[in-house]
Length: 287
Ligand SMILES: Nc1ncnc2c1ncn2[C@@H]1O[C@H](COP(=O)(O)OP(=O)(O)OP(=O)(O)O)[C@@H](O)[C@H]1O
Image 1 (cartoon, rainbow, N blue to C red):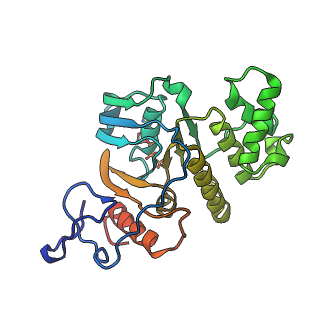
Image 2: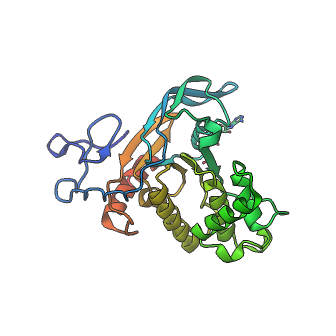
Image 3: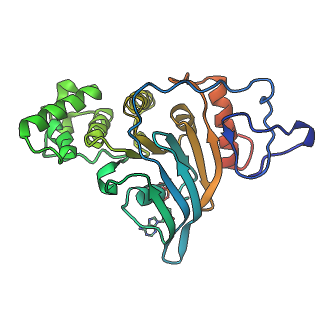
């Protein structure tokens, strides 16, 4: 990574900031250390850890991931960013088993089948237009047999995402944000241990997006699954994640922890500083 280093100004990374490669110059690091992370809520993490080891992924002659290494502990919220086409969605597809590595290994710390413990949420809600809202959520409850139990569970999931009163409606009459809430409820229905989020808030207006970020954070804090969020929005990444990884040239070029209390105050100097560091790497120049 290209961050200017002057001998006299070189500092050890402050607790929580981890960079690949050389030491770095962080102007305010000495005077304004980042606050310690807030303690997580007491809920036992239900998340599963996973590790990519030397994962290479090629499509024909084109290699997208070149020996990617990434360990994510159980229950961590990690954001994955990088330029368009750098391989973010490919990483999620490998993680969720929708695709296989060309070389290298991916280990998930669970004895259960990967298909049973991972779920994906996409930018488009992908709801069934011919099924009512509750029935759409029930699609994620295929492990339940009893119809009444299933309906009750779907209603409870809809309550979690603030849509109790829309259970009997058709997806077509919901707003974009409401449809994404239904998609989130469906993704959570099987209590996944790893939730892969492929730019799920990308199509929402700014205010709805922040509301959805807060909802996602609340649910993650309560349930403790491992969350992997692909996003183009660096502000969203630092607002939500415990850690942000940046993919460049098929590998991880930057790995930054975000040790800030939750819920985070958007626009705070600490978030802005981290955002600046990440944007600088992303753009290859001071942001
Ligand atoms: N099934 C496929 N066959 C051939 N090439 C593919 C396939 N899937 C992805 N690619 C290529 O791999 C590269 C990475 O794609 P990927 O969707 O992972 O990028 P991304 O970082 O998620 O991009 P974006 O931010 O634009 O969504 C792209 O060049 C894409 O064209």
